[in-house]
Length: 208
Image 1 (cartoon, one colour):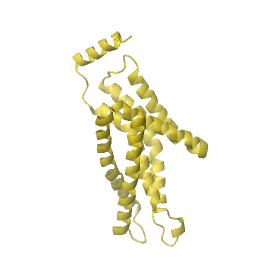
Image 2 (cartoon, helix red, strand yellow):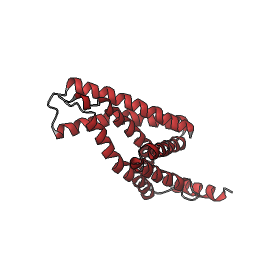
Image 3 (cartoon, one colour):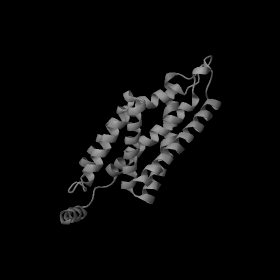
């Protein structure tokens, strides 16, 4: 669990650095004093998310092979609970943003480890993905948009602009991916064969 949490935290910090570098490149090459239109701004955000998401997924997959899927899954949950605890002390009104996704992921992971629920069909896996994805995505999108808006240049009012806030977009997105990727990969993987399912059920029934 500690290895998974540390690996995911390192991945999130790396995503923050990549986001900051990409954002500064965008500002230097494409940004103009009057800023882009709303549609263009959303396109820039989508490109930023894609640039960070692709390597984050690849790194998460590599880490999963190195230290194990359950270790990464549990590590992501631990990080979200720790951030929720910290937010409850420093920003009590924002703690729910982390607590609800952490609770959903904890329930789903607990159900999967429960005897008789380890091997599930496609609908069950899709349902567990939706259970984690709904609070994570719904609560993360406004946070990502807020960080993105705060990081945009403000010509004539440079004292209020914080360009490095965009780094938090990558950080938050990588943490959200740490909750979602294990369930996404499980939902998209082919269902187990009947023989494998029967063998897993038999093994579970024989476990004292």
